[in-house]
Length: 276
Image (cartoon, rainbow, N blue to C red):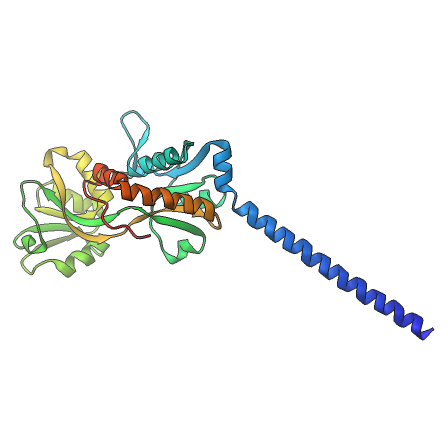
């Protein structure tokens, strides 16, 4: 009788062990399936012959609405360039700074090309390709004023937004005799320059481009680089196949000079050495 009860216990243990093994196999299968599903963005793009790319329309020269009411700018051109190299149609998805990452996470976009800088917080939730374009803070001024190095700023007045990155960087390199005029916001900084209160302005490229579009008569141009902050393409976490493919396109574009042409077209300066 005792042996019989012990035998049942053995059977129970054996069944329990089999149950856990089966659960482990199913769990492993689901994990593999999940990974396969997570890696299917490139396959879906190539099958549908269409890629959804998030771009800005409120951030010239990277993305804005042109006179024909269509998006244009460096980021828009880059989106179309990637689509062309993939051989697929590009569906441009307009986003803001606030929703561009959520659009990627919820698969409303396959890629984000929207002046996206790389930092640890963003790297925790999305992946990034190599950089495709520079973003920078710089000194800008009219063609009539010659500025070839920071020593040339001596004796000249420069407007800058107080506490901004360009203020910090300009303070490091400006000669003692440069007259830095600090203002409380970008509008006041730009206004001081466009109204002739100062000779030059130090600001981000997007602010400068918007200013140059509104005041073409001033013939403002890039003078001196203060800080590089390159842009990267955002990719959903785990979509390594798509990320690697875009990296191939960017690398080939750099080698062929295409990436540099986009920078010259929209930023009026070379792309320079972009980080991978």
